[in-house]
Figure 1 (cartoon, rainbow, N blue to C red):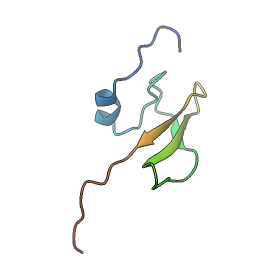
Figure 2: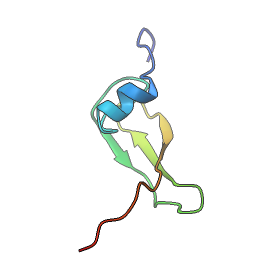
Figure 3: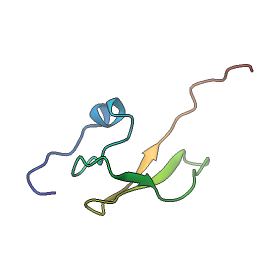
Figure 4: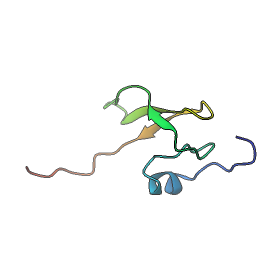
Length: 64
């Protein structure tokens, strides 16, 4: 992780959450279930073992 700058929120969202914000690896995966109470889901990096939470906000709805 040394030498790499953390991704900003904008950069992380721009990469659709598919990069580790610490080491920039694309080897990331969800590590749990969505918590609707606080809008988060745990994520981990398989490359550097970092863990973090993705944060989701309800944006609306669409009729089917």
